[in-house]
Each structure stands twice: as C-alpha cells, then as structure tokens.
Length: 243
Picture 1 (cartoon, one colour):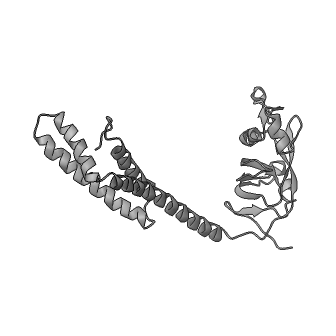
Picture 2 (cartoon, rainbow, N blue to C red; picture 1 turned 90 degrees about the vertical axis):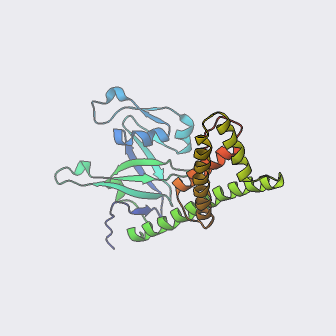
Picture 3 (tube, rainbow, N blue to C red; picture 1 turned 180 degrees about the vertical axis):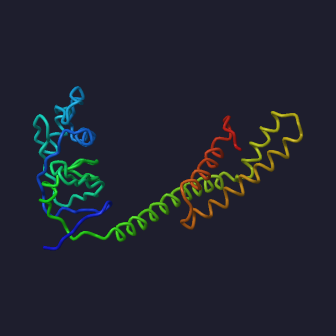
C-alpha cells in the first residue's frame, strides 16, 4: 500500500461513498446547521451539545441519522474534501482528527467540519494531486473568471455607447450637460475650469481602464472605476456627483 500523508490544502476526492460520524462540537455547529440540525447551546459547558432537528427537509435531503450527541451521514463518491486542519497528539488519541472544507453538492452540504481519524482512515480516494498542481489550476481558473468579468463590464459600456450613437449623442455631450449644470449652481468662474479639468482627468482614466478591460486585463478595482463612471453617465439628470 502506498503511503499518502496530506498537507494542508490537499484535496481528497472520494472514489467510494463513506459513512462518517459528525459530532456535536462547536467547530461542527455551522456544518450541522447546513444540514438542518441545531445544537443546544444551553449545554455549552459540556464537550458535546444536544442535537435537535431544525429543518426536517434538509435532514431528509442528506439522509442524516441524528442521535443526541452525533450525526451519522454518508459522504457520496466524488465529493471533494479539502484538508483544512490536522490534529494528532501523543497520549490523546481520542482527539486525533482532520478538519475538511467541502464545496458541497446535491447529496452533501457545503461547509467546514472535522472527523475522527478512525473515519478518515476508511476513506477510499482517487490519486491525489500535488498542491502545486492544485494552485496552478486555481490560478488559471481565477484568471479566466477575471477576464469574463472584465469583458462583461466592457460589453456593458459598449452597449451604452451604441445606444448613444443611435440617439446621435456622445459621452462628451453628456458630460458637457452635467458640467453646465454644476457651473450654473456656482457663480464663481473658477468652477468652470475646475469641473472641466476634473472631467478630463476622469474621462481619460475611464478610457484607459476600458481599454485594459477590453484586452482581458485589470481587476475588481478597475471594474469599479468603469462601472461607477458609467453609472454617473446614465444618471446625469439626478443629483449623482459626477466627480
């Protein structure tokens, strides 16, 4: 048998369904709640609190069997469990445990929970991926999501520009209208130069970042600059401050 000792962040994919016991301990409370089970906090001074059903439909959905201090449930094959914590201590074998985070699915809830090593040792898992491979895949996925979000913002702006073009208008004309309103509210002629300069600065920034998003680059802060400026363009007839 090949030895595999997981590190934090390792992902275990179950190749077979496995029955486990989840105990009524505070670190499992959020996960138990996700399967419709409530912990009685009046017993918080004890190690394990009493369990009661809070949502019977969830309990039925996950086929959970509840006793006073623990829940029996089967983790389906194909479930991905990410190792979150490992606790092993000499002389305290009863506390040996592993904590996982599960993304969840149709037959198993999402969340963080711990299991005794006696349960974990019954797992049948697929060949584990090295941490470096997992991180590389996540980086690619993250970059792809960023590009999709960037293009979504760019396309939203493009639809706005197309609508303007159909109405024979430009962004410059919209801004000019807004600047005029602001200037009319202030008799000081210095405001004209102030608002004009501010517009030029904001508009240049908007165009530069828009080009960045178009080529798939940029991040959430860039998207926020563009969406904020677009919102202000779309609401020139309100009290939204353009600058």
